[in-house]
Image 1 (cartoon, rainbow, N blue to C red):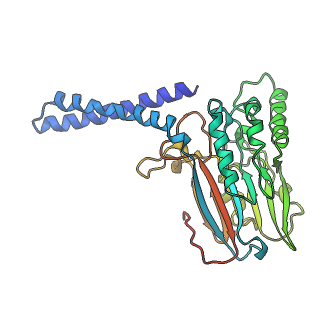
Image 2 (image 1 turned 180 degrees about the vertical axis):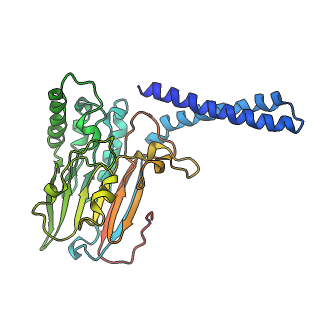
Image 3 (image 1 turned 90 degrees about the vertical axis):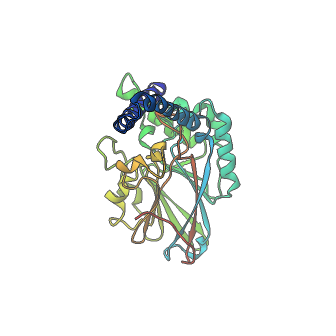
Length: 331
């Protein structure tokens, strides 16, 4: 399936290039330059699409970056000043099936950041829980002072596989859940956990996938996730960032939402991000009053087994209760 998608994409892009070359050759012909001369020389441009994809496959998807973000707000208790959260998302373990060492390196790099908390915002698998099996020893090494918290993404509900029955699909979903717990992760399936430092505390909640887009099923219940959470600084793990505007910002007292899902289309060329055509909040840090959203570009891939201008991302978020640090966010 991935190979077919790549070949179709390359064919489409190549046709666009041929059209542009033809237009350029036609304009040249009007200026007295032979059409065939410009057209034949322009055909060399057809090397660019496959060369770019090859780079994204061999190099781009293996060049993991660490983005450091500081969140400043008076709502963070003093005891949590400097609290370090490593935010990761969208592993899509199928995309690591021939790159075991690459994933092991990612886990090692996360550990080197000395996080207080590791937060995974969904899509551990692409199609099936069987993708997790080879990686359990590696992912079990993920660790932090306050552990690893996670939520389910749209792919984790396994809707994109050819199951024989609804019951078989439900069993697959339960296996995803149980394997995350087996690895020592705290799956926040419409639930919260309270983290304390002395007399201070913050709440970290998580919901099953909730989307404002009809093509993605909604499974989570934010009310259930926050039941009994009380007041104070709150972090929400919610896979799909469209839920932030639809149900979080301006609707709740949640201070920071961590999402993924978009992969930023795994494509950024000359600053252009096609994912912006679909997602208003597609990548990076956003703010609405005193509420923040961070959209992680993810670690793995779906459909297109390459990353062009959008490297796999580990995000290191530092919470600050003072306002003397710079922050960069999209309006």
